[in-house]
Image 1 (spheres, rainbow, N blue to C red):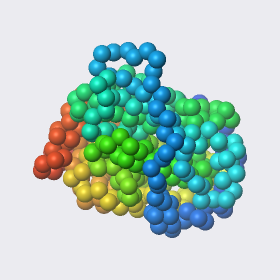
Image 2 (cartoon, rainbow, N blue to C red):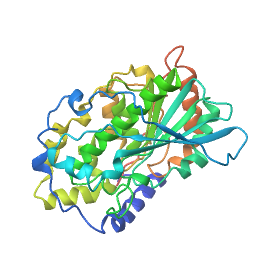
Image 3 (cartoon, rainbow, N blue to C red):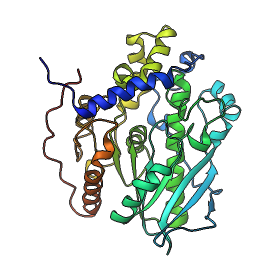
Length: 362
């Protein structure tokens, strides 16, 4: 008989059950599988083309600056994203026009920007930057000695169309063209921010970290040109096809695809040919720090370990618990990120000791 699920795994399952109420409000009505041709078996340079330094970035400084050490400016610019699918271009310019406006929050000392920056990419379903700006980002700013930028992903926050019932509803869904374009646009927007920070602000080092969905975007950024100098993906992998089949929180995506007549075998074929799971890093392994959770029900340890081996076993730090209990390990995560960051200019950060045995998920 297997052991009982851990506290972290139990919390993940409970949250997954509650997600049925949110995602159960409605499903996808448009089946775009027949429009996937431009994405299937496409090389990385087609899916993620080069970007240029944006010339329209506007810096909005707050009228009232609270705090003595830090200020938070807002950056806005026009997204360079161009959809591959002709049918989706009409939606991108019409119903989803809000996604053409990119927003990022820029935290730096009152005395002015420093030479090192860290971009944070948030998770799925997040409506705004307030929790991270109150809890996580100030600690990264102070303890790592970096300026921090928090970029807003497509279909979240101010970029969420009025037709969406909740933030992020249109990012991950059975509308697979829209899902792929959401990923593509995320990489375009982060890379244009990187380009602007380097060319216009003189930053000498730019890293990217992200949580869950943001962690997956972070990993993909390590596989394209004009990417970051280092990455720290947190509770993430790029094996979307496996996650659709296994993660409770993605049940609606799986259910809608079934309703469209796309069974498990066909789903695995499609996600395999979409290629995200097969991306290979351009960044050296010593410039990556992976932070997964031992009992994560959504981003399972088995899949993380599989991709970790495929990527040459970069430095990795396992935290106890599940996906939703990540905040309980925040102190450990920041301490490990600090040690990793301090070692970037010298020897590669050492790999962690072997993680504890994974608890069965029931």
